[in-house]
Image 1 (cartoon, rainbow, N blue to C red):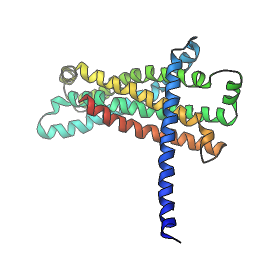
Image 2: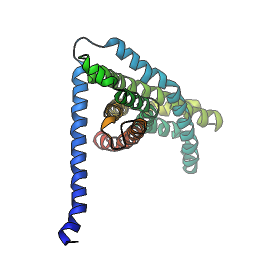
Image 3: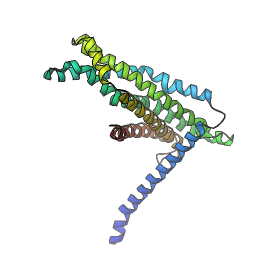
Image 4: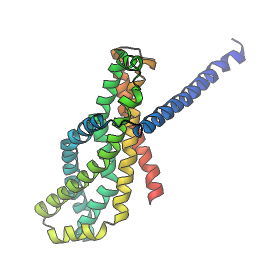
Length: 267
């Protein structure tokens, strides 16, 4: 085989992959922009918004509370047995509250919402695509992005900060259970340290992260489901399964990557 032909195959594959990534990013940007613009278009879809608030927000309350409680309890144990070596167990409330409010609260809440609601959104839109329900909406002159994506986007950016605040509060109480009730730290010291150390800038930073994570999660999950028919894996059930898996994996990776970027700017 000529040397030029041997080099052509990997270079061509690399070029095709690069073009594919650029095309996907462009399509994702257009999809998000259309959904964002249609949030403000009249008439407002109030019924759809309430439906999605219930699905994304209300139905995630139990899993967020459980995750927050056990995360706070684990932080209480780990923090106590680390701090007691230095005689500083009195600052356990500071460690638990700042760790939850600045980092673990927004990140774990977004990951829980991705697993519970994001995967369901990707599967639902994927099934609507392969059963041609989305094509039927377009045939009836209904803007499918406005109808399917915009209410979910608005509901996510409202729900995620509220769920994160709930996660933080439950997690701090979980730290109190292990630190004060089980291990004997004075409740007064625990809550005084929590109140003294948490500043408004910490709370605002957590809310900013939750807001951005809401956009990331719902955009990636809806995009993967909406464009299921363009996947290489096929147009049927296999394509829907692949789209759902990709939605969860990509969302989780982007949550962590976005968290790093936002932390760099907020610190």
